[in-house]
Amino acid sequence: MRIVATLIAMPVLGAGLALAAPAFAQARPTVGQFEVKAYDKIPKTKTAVQLTIDSALGRELRREVMIRLSRRGNEVGFSGGNVMRMDVYYSNSFAGDGPPTIDPGRQVLPLGDANPRPPLPDNPITPRDSYGGSTPTLRITLTLYSTDGGRVLWQAVTTCKAPNSNVERVGTAMIDAVFDNADSSRIADAGCPI
Image 1 (cartoon, rainbow, N blue to C red):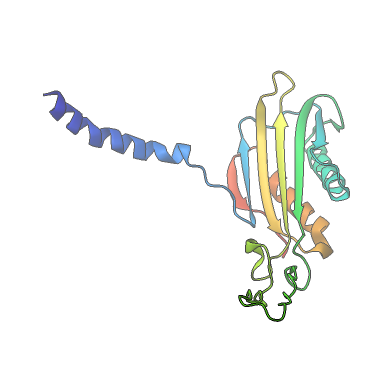
Image 2 (tube, one colour):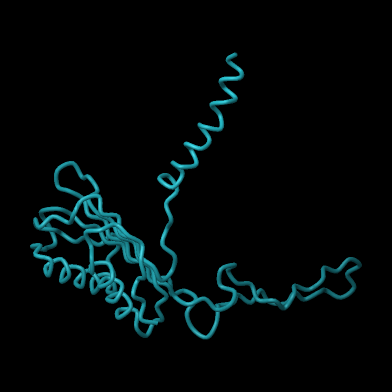
């Protein structure tokens, strides 16, 4: 009797897991999209915006985030209050006319060798993801932590393709899109200007 009850319960258990799957599997934003996870609304208390890696681009985009927070009514600064960690990642290593290549050189075969090695092919050696001339990518991650216990209150991740010539403009457009309706969780268009 237990075997029959188990066999009957298995389809019910499988259906329950299938219904619960969307809660566990979360879609990540693709290039050109952003995702906001608002566990709580961004509080109006003072917010310190801190860069994880200091760079000129990061400082410029941090300034833009601080402007958007102050427009929302937040007091902003570099210390005190809730902490918003900001990670700016700009992948421009394959920018330019095409992907960089590494010239392995041609092997010179010694004369009279009975078992010569064939020369290396003329194909360039490039990273696997650079075929097709990849465009530089800008990714911004913002995570707001509370002062009491370090609980994550809010998080946003946004990614756009961003050529070297206008990476700051692309970053500003991405930040505008995230803070347009920052208190609701969603995945939407990142506002990439290209």
